Length: 192
Ligand SMILES: Cc1cc2nc3c(=O)[nH]c(=O)nc-3n(C[C@H](O)[C@H](O)[C@H](O)COP(=O)(O)O)c2cc1C
Image 1 (cartoon, rainbow, N blue to C red):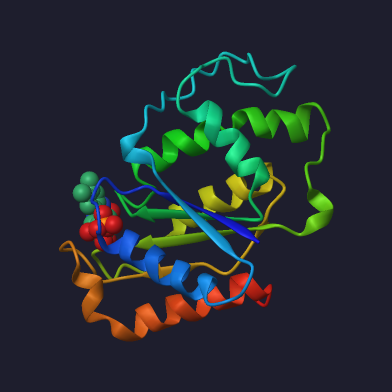
Image 2 (cartoon, protein in one colour):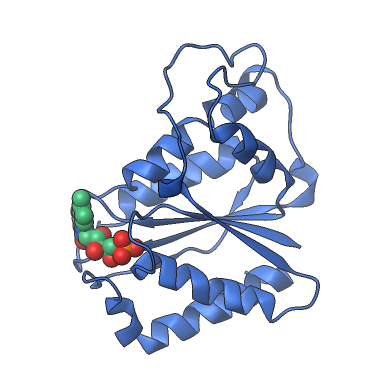
């Protein structure tokens, strides 16, 4: 089982990335699993231009670092989207990545092509936020849910961590990181 982990924070080794590393370590405890990290901030990803070019082909007309990512997402068995909360939503890096999957939305809803839908592949959202706000993850969760649906991925259990702001603050939440390792094991064994 191959898991693709999309890191959406500009901060290396920040809270969301640390959470993702713990999930990855749980996944890798299970035999026959592989994990690949993609750090969006290191890539050149243009925002969707809304040109409709993908409507008839399901292929995006923009040629940039997304070209390789479409294939990686198609080939993975589990997708993990990892984002800090910015203004109650996904980071801009994540949102640009998600919006470019309009090409996959077109594949499913305009061209009627269901992609690996019978395999019960899943998507997972990991997110971190500074505050304790009740609704702080609502925006990101809704976007992730619609994104996973466009890819014919089931929306799996998410892990959302409040109250972490400074880079590395999440290390103080050892129980949360243990929870992340456990989630990784569940993802790899299909029990999430
Ligand atoms: C531009 C920006 C906007 C933010 N907006 C919010 C917010 O709306 N609510 C919140 O609780 N935290 C907010 N934060 C704090 C981050 O979500 C928090 O520090 C998070 O743990 C950072 O994760 P990272 O270390 O992986 O980047 C914001 C931070 C930045 C830089």
